Length: 625
Image (cartoon, rainbow, N blue to C red):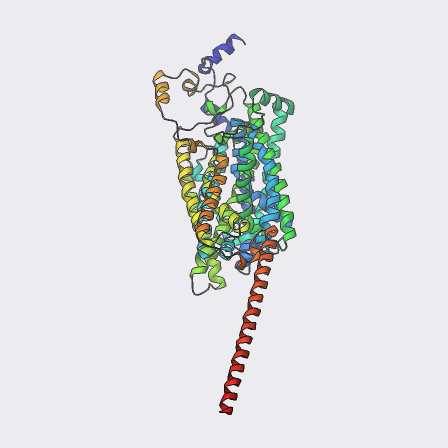
């Protein structure tokens, strides 16, 4: 190492007067020009035109068409819509950050996703598709009772209203990084467009805008990966630098559930989490129900699985590419990236900034992911509010026009609430991938537990399911919020991969506090701090499974002290491989009942015959006398 390199290590070179400051570097990279704004605006206009077409030109002819596209949509656009709805900006920006900060362990979730595909195809999809539902939570009323339908809908509403603000916040971070525009200025503007086309166009508008947005997502990610890899020196250099830093790694085989990413957390905890958000979530099921046959729904499912795995792989590789670019000067330490999830937008401006229009294409891709998720969430919430919160409790049914107005007002009101909640998400403190999974698990665990009991455990009754759902929600609410509070306050910290700033070519005053020695008083304060309770340090990948176990456990216990007449259960409400047991038991019961009826008829005939003989005897006796 040269003498200049040594002075860099001491943090002195960063103060050289001829060096530009981090603020100057950041401002110089915010060269989002007129062509970029045009590309971004074209994406928004295209989405708005799709909404106008399906809202005013080819109007939906009723709530069934508005909510499930008339159940006759085509497989390919629905497949792309599933991908676009599922892969939000959280994945596009959060996954690269995860790989940069913590390494490649998370990418093994791809293996889990394949297993999830088989579980959905065999267990869940046949049940929902055969029942021809509009709201997934109609199932809970058919299987248990109306109280369970309301509980399931409430869980979904809480989950969607905590998830959507994160979905909106993430692309605003990207836009802020490349333009400097405040996130609270761009967020309402873009959301108005999304609320508009979702409101007027219904599910068909959502699906076809998703169709366009999926190509933007894949295109923008491929563009940054190909150009970035070429500029940094090729694939081999990207791999080598990440190997040297320890980022290319397999998941740990540690048995401790407190370890953030282990093979068990990814394969088991991740399986339950992904199964919940893919198999029983109204956002996803509503698209499967828009297809005419179960076979077409299964084809859409496997297109979705393949697309998601490819996109996760692209996002993961972009995380490796970010490290290869900034391996000598960590932008998080220098505050060139002011938030963790601004790393990919920063790379975009480094790689594509000199090409007019290309940064705009990337931002359009990230916003496309967000808009597709937001529009899906709003449309699904409109379905749930109408079908589960309103229809069961009104005596006079809506007219077609009344239902249409109600659904559109619902979309507008929920959209405004989500935009307002962005202020809360901004203060959350952890990067969005973990934050979204952690908060989502508060309702995801109990919700999956309820549906799993209904489809896989036919002997559990409504009382058990209700008690289990409420217990799971209470427990996970306490655990999730307590753990998130500990993370936000700095009580819980996670191991991160090594970074350095010794190769920086700009000055950054913040580095003095990060690279020089920590004052002794601070060390003593940290030593005196109590370690958070072990349960709070549980890996976030176990959250959904924990909520599911609590829900099912309490449900089983309550069912033990009550009773469930399994023989009266409709076999169509359970998984296909369970139906034969229900049917055979029902057959046995029917035969037994028929046998009892025959016995009762026989006894009745004997009594009648006996009575007739007695009457004849009496008559004969009277005649003789």
